[in-house]
Image (cartoon, rainbow, N blue to C red; front, side, top):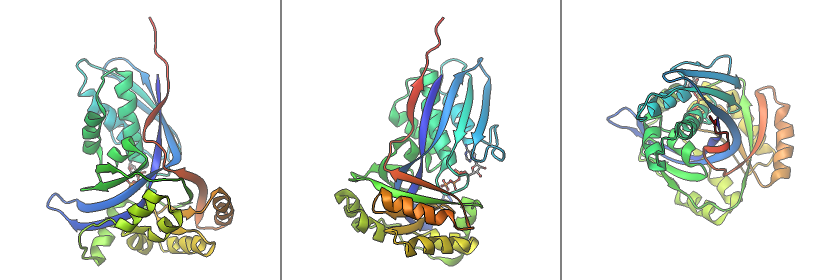
Length: 302
Ligand code: ATP
């Protein structure tokens, strides 16, 4: 048995550039892994057997077959084993589904780490990163964790030496937003320039100036997400009025993320947002935290 814990992410910056020849947008993003975790357990199974079960967020709507990114990750890794392998995967989900926090990508990253260990394949981090990129643009970051720049499709990762701790309040929505729909809405209205990450934001992260970070948060997908789900704008205003250092939509939304000066401000803002009809649930989290990590392991003897 191998148990892996994997975080969700928020994007502190998400600059969307033009569509490339391969159909992807050029992205420049700053990711931060935050302390809202899914847990994935990989259990031994007979050779050729692949099973998956889910509990928690979205368990009733998510596919438990090849449509699940965790299963796809396990299958992709199995193709690199020298002998036939099998696995039974259990996922405990807390990261909201279709919430802009890359929960599916997180589970894929967790499955790579868990199965690499369960099957004793010994693939290196760079090898796992190569597989991660094949599974989706956000998967490499969820292996990496911390605070990092993502360029290209968002999947070329470079660490940021961020100081200090960011206190976030996450307002989860009653609705999901499909990432492709948000990009289509972006394309309808924008003629983007190059996807440039603000050097001021990186400097503020490196000096641990959280107040300044709050003023520099930026997401090019925020306006299109609000056009698709106008109530999101009201949730952001509520957090701004309450004095958050910064407020933005995470990734393609609709989770709203509020940066706070300390744990007390986060708790107070959390209490305020809980009372809003448009907010399904509030999570108080912090970042940066590590990427997909083994937290328990039992070796079967005999
Ligand atoms: P991103 O921030 O990368 O845009 P997201 O957080 O908005 O992603 P996810 O929850 O990662 O969205 O997943 C979006 C879709 O992927 C889901 O609606 C679901 O159909 C599919 N999916 C496949 N496997 C999973 C999984 N293990 N967890 C969540 N979604 C999954």
